[in-house]
Length: 87
Image: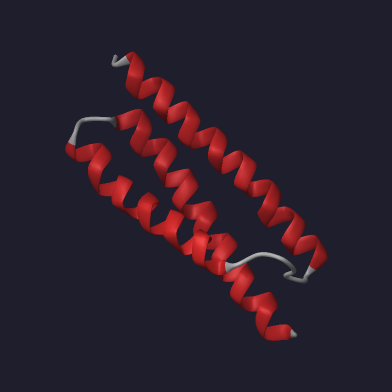
């Protein structure tokens, strides 16, 4: 087991948990204020790159954590667009 991979995977997974707080709050508020979709799109792009990069380099724990953060970022972006359209 690669300890660095495990630690990075835990960071990826914990990032998804923290981002889930934003997803939950946005779902609860049903209103977007003071948030731009541009940074979220950038981090989603980076996350999608990681879904290629991690397995290509044998970083399985990072890959698993990366799946969680990519999925939660996709959810967040969908909500941003959806609630912006409701205005």
